[in-house]
Image 1 (tube, rainbow, N blue to C red):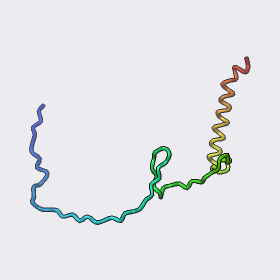
Image 2: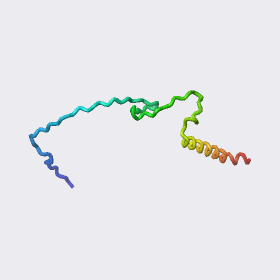
Image 3: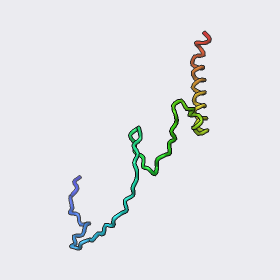
Image 4: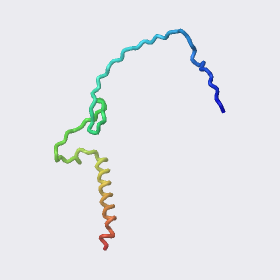
Length: 91
């Protein structure tokens, strides 16, 4: 099945000129911060980081939900470890 090519007539050929006015935009100064993983964060989106000292208890700075998530994961992993060694303990 052959397809015959036909000239495009959808674009009208006119001699009319189009004038565009380009308006200047105000430049917004934004600080960019490069993260350790290489990503870039705009200054307005930057999360405030608190500086902690070495050896400080981070559990005091973490959110309660995050602490519960970590605790549940830790207890679950401990119980999985005990279950996996149950046969060995019995022998």
